[in-house]
Amino acid sequence: MSRRWLAASVMLVLTGALYAQKQKKIAPSRWNLFSPEQDIQLGREAAAEVERKVAVLDNKELTGFVSRIGKKLGEQPEAGNYPYTFKVVHDNSINAFALPGGPSFVHTGLIQAAGNEAQIAGVLAHEISHVALRHGTAQVTKANAIQIAAGIGGLMAGGSMLGQLAQLGAGLGANSLLLKFSRDAESDADLLGARMMARAGYEPIEMARFFEKLEVEEKARGGQMSQFFSDHPNPGNRVKAVSEEVKMLPARGYGKGDSASLQRAQSVIRSLPVPKKTNANFRHQPPAGGSATGAGIDAARPAAALKQHQSRSVSFSYPENWQVFQSGQSNELTIAATEGLVEGQGGRTEIAFGALAGLAPGRGGLERDTEQFLQQIAPANRMQRSGEAKRFQVSGSAALLNLYFSASPYRGRREVDAIVTVEHPKGLFYMILVSPENEYPKAQPVFDRMIQSIQIAR
Ligand SMILES: [Zn+2]
Image 1 (tube, rainbow, N blue to C red):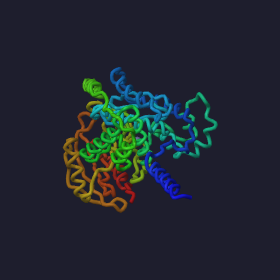
Image 2: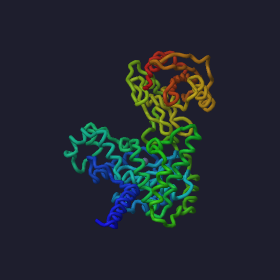
Image 3: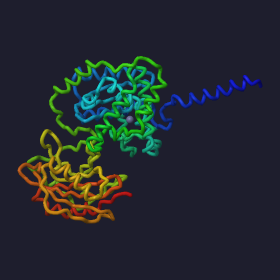
Image 4: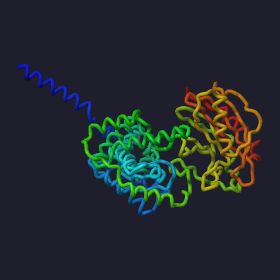
């Protein structure tokens, strides 16, 4: 072999290596027991469920605005051949989501938060990538593989897939198709979305910029996570990874979209009446079942028998006639009978008889974190402190109990708010137990048992 040949083959290896390091090959996972046609059918059924629960706007200008952007992206080869549809949900929270097979929803809050059209395109391109990469049904496959493998051959065409899957024991609703995605799925959706944006003529870096901006705002709000980031966790270095990807895309004049039509859409949204349910995140919205007069309070009282709630980081017991609902904005849990949830001011669902549990930021020790937490919530909820904090232990963790009084959503009544805070490796775990004042003596023994059952995972 001559020297010249040797050099050439070295060159070949080098460029091969460079290429491999360059554009990552992104494809749907092979481990998916559903067919792409089944993705489409499942997504249609789930979309019908979603539309019963959220406020889809029937506004030509807004739907047209979002559909125009979505269509441009959905036509690109990266989007696969799915029948994408785009609808606007009247909800101030910053969120968007897409179901398998293409039905996509954008909250008005997200349109308001965007600085240019390319940023909305960025979120849509990210969502469309999840659809094209079939992340929803791949996750359902992973979580329910045995039940689905056993029954999928017998699924009848024409029947409801959601219903048939539920019968197989694969508890499936719109919710389970929108699980929190893994970091790998997130970075794939970012990269594929950037390529899709570029091909549609949008400046791809705007996607990363928008995510970054939303994260900064989230930190400013005390780390309260928006639903979008709890479903789409930052895979780490989002901006850097997209910037790297952008360098590999053909150099073209990418645009930020049509600023006049974004401004028009934003002014249409401003002119809409305030959304009826400000917490209307469909999968977490606890239905208001009680009445502000206190009718139905019998069903709202905590039963003496308890059942257990278990999550990765905490477990506790709660009355068996109550349910656990996840609140939209902050990963907070509402625990109550529907009769204990009352539609209060501005259509918000308020807890009249029940509990609220969650994780607050903290690092300064139990006393200081608790004070900070109480100072944040007490004035906003017009709560009056009653007595001194009580220090105790729950399952080996230091805890504090503070009692407050405030106005009950049951009109004309006062309520007791028993606030328990417990040290947690990731901050401060809190549980707020709410009872009308006149009911508190009877509820207190059950509340005490709930508190004693709290266990923080380490
Ligand atoms: Zn995502």
